[in-house]
Amino acid sequence: MPNYSAPVRETMFVLNEVLSYDSFASLAGFSEAPPDVLETILAEGARLAEDVFLPTNRVGDLEGCVRAEDGSVTTPKAFREAYARYREGGWMGLAQPQEFGGQGLPYCVHAAVGEYLVAANMALMMYPGLTLGAISAILLHGTEEQKRTYLPRMIDGAWTGTMNLTEPHCGTDLGLLRTRALPRPDGSYAISGQKIFISAGEHDLSENIVHLLLARIEGAPAGTKGISLFLVPKFLPGPDGGLGKRNAVSCGSIEHKMGIHGNATCVMNYDGAIGWLLGEPNAGLKAMFTMMNEARLGVGVQGLAVSEIAYQNAAAYARERLQGRALTGPSEPDKPADPIIVHPDVRRNLMTVKALNEAGRAMLLWTALQADLAHRATSDDERLAADDLLGLLTPVVKGVLTDRGFDNAVMAQQVFGGHGYIEENGMSQFVRDARITMIYEGANGIQALDLVGRKLALNGGRALQAYFQEVGAFCEAGRNDENMAPYTKALKKGLNDLQAATMWLMQNAITKPDNAGAAATDYMHLFGLVTLGYMWGRMVRVAHDRLASGTGDTAFYEGKVVTGRFFMERIMPETSMRLARMSAGADTLMALPAEAF
Image (cartoon, rainbow, N blue to C red; front, side, top):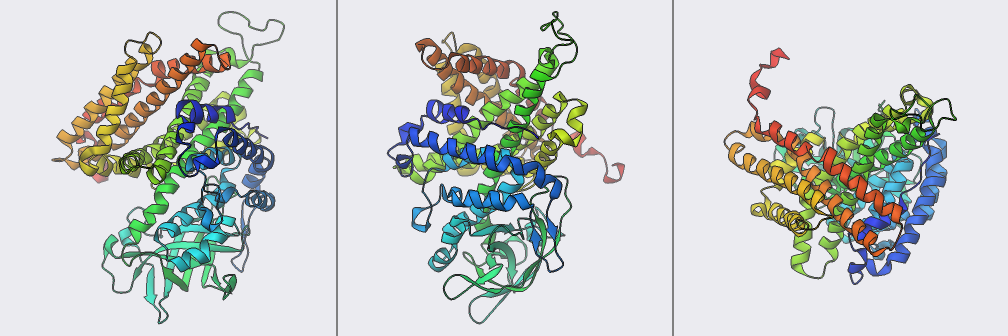
């Protein structure tokens, strides 16, 4: 069975030393979790991940979920106890409002713990993960009665939630949806239709499941303008707020999937099910994006988490597996062969994943911090700046961390050679599980189009210009610093490529929209490379300061300096490739007729 050790030291380094977590102590939530309390929370989350969640991961992959004839779904038997421990620990409510039973701590703390739990068992964590998105939507768009009825039970974990968007004939193009909502005399609606690919749509971990569902009210406009969001519980609330009668919603089947076998991905049938409008009529898509944006950050966590556990196991295997001799001569002459970690190509894989994981964690936590500041900062300007940056970074976090996460899982599997391809070592599960993260909550091509087509020009490009200014100022500050110059020079080259790519889009995408579509994925990854490089610059600067002062763990900080240098030398140069591919335009991409494919 694969092993896992939650990277608490790495998380504390990013939050405390790089992002200056303690500087926000005056803000709501942060004051309740000062650095010493933060470390305790992370350590407890690590124990839950390592001792409770991890042993259920392979079992869940092998057992999967089972649907009975009555439509009920049984999850892998080990999941129930693990979920109960998660619920008992109050982890669902870590960053939720205290007025509804949560602890009100910062979202960045929730994201940090989330990485550990997802790494230990991604399929299991999808049950509470979807619930958290539903909680956010109800908080923002629900009536006071809806909040009182649903939020305390969902934050407690007694009830879970889902997101119902996709139908058999429509995925990304939600304007095509056919699910109908007929008004009832009491103000509720009768919902009829079918949804597919619904994660955690039916299961036995909670006593009720609250489905948030997109449907079209009878007579509403066609397309996305006529979509509304509805709250449709599996069991209707009773007079006391508890469970009432069963609603007309059922699981028709469980999807047979490549990975995440422990999560019940369901076909859901609504046969006149009773639901209530969440938010305004015909404004459902906007309301659903409350869930989608949080879910996209959550999927970014998944990409990082699977990459981290795959890396840890590959590194351990490389230190132990004996094959061949080092090119420079035997490193362990008393043994029949050297451990494969002596081979440069094995190290290429490991160093690449290590460098991306460490920068990816920093990028994720930096983005999560913006979510906190957007809600908790004391000035309007601070909140606006944080919200701008959050919107800009969200598609990058989702798209880049999941694309890289899958690639990293494959590289980690490669370290095992043939032993990575067989099921016993667990590496194939990481590859299979990581693959879905590139697809759901908006396929990564959609994330790239969102960045290029919407986020860059939003508010006159205000967020983008602030980002350029921040990264540029960092480069300038390190230009004459002997320690930092090698890093900031490489980062500045990447930033120049990103600015050139942005200018190319401005000049070539308006008159020929296909140029934007053809360039979008490369632009998103170029943006991601610069952001990851900026994170490495900030981490290395801290490391050099600690080494100069002689405080702290010397080996830890020296590792940061070397790994950051590797990133700048071996990964950052990809920005030039991305710019060159973008600049080629869409002509050859769109030239062939459809029948030529």
